[in-house]
Image (cartoon, rainbow, N blue to C red):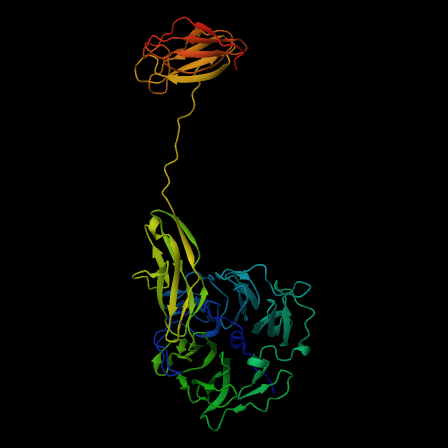
Length: 531
């Protein structure tokens, strides 16, 4: 039996749920989600789910709602365009497949010849912001492109890339090949040893095999699984002609899209063993449905040529209500420690996976913060008393979880850093070694006294109160003046200057007259060499 490659469905295996902030009230599975309506202006032919549950979509559109996006875009959970992802002019043609690497990079396969004006044939890789990754280029050992058209992609755990398509050589020759993470051909890959690389897998490694009108299941060893109720379209399903795609839910149930002979698209669901699922209401579209992606909050995203789903206008992209996973919330991104000055701004946030919109309650040191009931907690003009341990309690109908504690440290406001005018050179004496400050002339302005060792004197400079000084007046102060201080030594409330004479046994004292002048030096024996 020939296996129909289903690259979009393959992408759903192994993706992890991240954030589910927008989830509709649960209706019967299969009902149209009224909260999701992105409005692309053309066909959506490819879907992939990021780790944060955002959607990568590809197709023949040039606009999503009021936002320009050329053939590839990323959507937020509510269907709005994610402005942080922009591939410019995008692939040169639409109608391609997409896959996600473990590091968030996006792989494209199709018949395009360039990406945003840069030559790239059939297979390319984008960074998580939509820019072309120039390090990746599919190629043979001689440097030539291997494929001119790629219709299926699968990413292995080591980010090696499996691709199926038409070779670049003349004629129509299909091949499966594996590329290394830089796009070079992996010559060790043997397709014969991996006969079903694009088949969807249920738990236990069982393979779902799909052709135009049937679904069968193989055991991991490749033998038919007799416990599976193989599906054959026709008879019980009027006007059925072609299965277009399938997807596998986390509980192994199978979502199936098919197109009728008159071009209408339909979606139904099978139990994990292939039997009909009566708990899912089949959905209908007026035109074909191509890719299906199952979100981890349970939503089922469909893309195609349609303009209505269940009779409601939906252009090329819609979401159906899925199962209620019925589990308590799971925190996928914890709040982190913060430090801020008094008066600063602090933001704590948490990312959560939940089957329904959860509630949030932030706490400081174990006490609820009034009004702090959103996923993001913003504190403005923080004060010292707001320092402490922050956490959030997240709750849904099943249960609640607490986040990790994030500490807030609030710093006291800092004083302004002191500043000084540029230094100015003031001439005193020869080889000055000590200085003292005092008001020598009674004008309440600081003056300077400087001991000059090599000239045996003390220089007195009277200050003007603005950082300047008069010309120095020199007073003999004994041999080798080494240091000086200021003090009133005779009780007349007038400052004098004692000077230590280095290498002698004397201290010299100059008594001030209170007008900035000093009397002749008086010398006193100290009893030993001064230092």
